Length: 422
Picture (tube, rainbow, N blue to C red):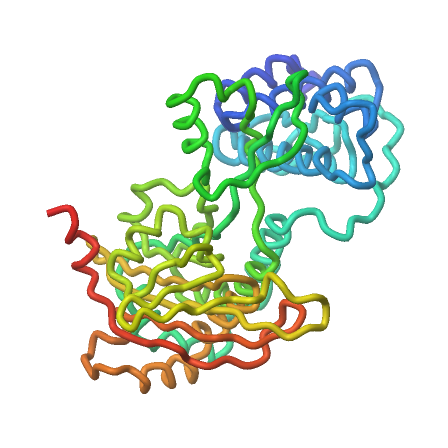
C-alpha cells in the first residue's frame, strides 16, 4: 500500500512562517528563542535553563535560576504564542511546532485529520527533569489560569449570578449585542541596560504603560534606546486574581462573548466597540484615566495611594503599602459605572491596593451589596444605578479585606468627558 502520511516539512520553513505571521509579537526575543530551541533539537541537545539565559537572553555567568524565573516566563509565553499561531493562522496544519510543558525543547507533532495533535514524529530524546516547583511564576499566569479554570467548570451558573445580572449596572451589558471586553490592569515593564548593553534591572514607570509609550519616548529622544529596552513584559498585582474570581462568573453568566486583554495591550478602538469591565489598581487605569476622572468627583493625589475629593477638598489615604506583616491598615476601594458614547457601558472595579480592589469586586458581584449601595444615593434619579461612583475605606490585615465603610457616593455625568474638547 502507498504511504499516505505527509512528508515531514523543513523545520526552518515552519519557523519562518510563524515569524512572518507576526504571532510572536514585536519583541525579537521570541524569534531568537524559537531559533535556539530548534537548533538544539536538530543537534539532539536539550539546553539547560542557565544556557538559555546566557545564550538567548543575554544574562551573564552570575544568573541564578533559583531566583530569576525569566527563562521559564519566556518559554511559557513562546509556547502560548505557538498555540495562538496554529489556532489563528494555520489551524489545518499537518505538522506543528510544539514546546512540551516542563521542557525546553521544540518537537514536531503530526496532526490527525480532525486537527488534533498526534504523537511527536521527532526522534526520541532524553526528557528534561521537572523544574523546581515555583512558589510564584507570575500573577499574570495566575489570573489566566483562574479564568480557564472557571470557564471549564460548572456548565450553568448558580441562581445568585442570574440575580446579580438583574441589577441595572450589569443589565446594561446584557441588553444588546455588543461583546464584553475584560481589561486587566497590568504594570508594563521595560529593561534598563548596563554599559555592555545587557539588561541590568527591570523598570516600572507610571508614565510608560505600553510598548507604544516606550516607542514614543524613543522617538522623542533617540539616545534613550542605548539605555532602555522593550522586554514585552508586564505584571499584575495578586489582588487581581481574587477580584477576577468574583467578576468572571458574572460575565460568564451573561452568555455573551467575553474577551480578556491587558491594559498595556488595549487599543483605543476597543473602548468604543465593547462593553468595558476594568479590574485592577487605580494606578494602572492608563487609557481609562481621562475617560473616568474627567467626569469623576475624585482625583488621584500626589501618589496613587491618595484620592482627592474635589467637592469638599478632602484627601483619602491608603496605608496598605506601609504596614508590617500582621499589622492592620486602611485601603481604598473604587467602584464606578457610566455609559459610553456608543451605547456601551463602562464598569470600573478598582482600588489603591489589593484589599481595596478585592472589596470593590465583592460589592460588584453581590446583588445585595449593590442594592444597599443604591439606597445610599444622594439623588433618586433612575440613572443612578448605571452612572455613579462609590469610594470605600477598607480595613484589612496582610492584604486581606475584613470590613469597609462607604466614604463617598455620587452620580456621574458622562457628558463632562467631552467638556474640555469643545
